[in-house]
Length: 384
Image 1 (cartoon, rainbow, N blue to C red):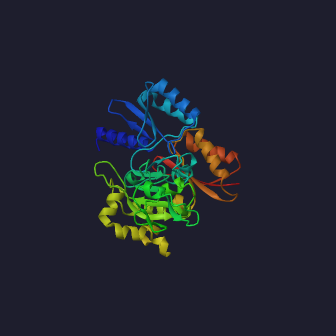
Image 2: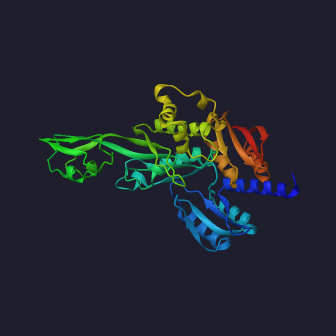
Image 3: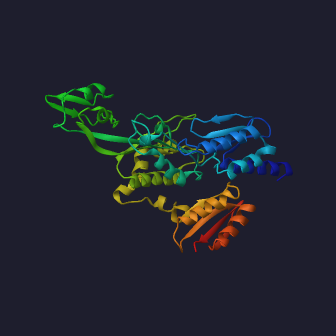
């Protein structure tokens, strides 16, 4: 390989690695943007102040809010890139992500503050972010959560979408026959038949409008849960997500199906093929039978072989996180496991591998194994 070609390959590799932590080259020469992670669009006032300070110092005093609830600082010259990154991370700001991997979680406020919210979206978003953020995939992998069928955060446009829903039940004794439910139902799913009010479950979109507005509480929650959509995407070949499972009542069951779907995509998706297009190529019926197989106590063989190291044991990817924030995160992770348990960290070469490993030893923990990989290290640590 010629010297110029080698430089070009190295430059591409460096740009790809920067994308892993949300640092993206702009069209302007030697100019970059830094994308910051949010979970469901939330940042504290203190974090926003830090972002503003970094933008004023390095980015031309402008901040871009993305369509997926991330925050971006544009127009950072390459000479200032490392300083801007360090200032953000040292103040607790987590950089974002780009490229073929799990992206930030989009979420509405849900039941925490919204009068229409049926499920707690923020807690679910944090749980999904902890598992899928920056996880490698055949192409970009996006997750969206909506607290109700109002669909404000557009979960049906995401590779995996979750929507809260509630199935209403009618209480004859409480009903005063005001017919408000009939008039406000957005899909005409409620009708009066004699003295009875009847719900057409095929028409019901599980929005809970009748429950929230019934003055006599004649409509009450009968079943509440999560509806799972798979395969949504916009981009050059738009595709709305397919409704895979309706009103999953257990969060554990929902998380299991999401993990199954992600496993399936990694096992079967082609490079630069979005999850929905993988489903179309293979066939939704066949794919869903495999993805939802745990219903029948089964797990497809190809998924069993695709279990990753981080799913088999405690794991934290700290690549792209600067010192001393990487040690802070490692220490918090150690605090969550039991004495004698092990956890694997991914750490960048240079200061991160040296400082974090040494600091963990100083805390009394035992570093069992350090394995060099391409540009980073796998570090297995046992808690004292």
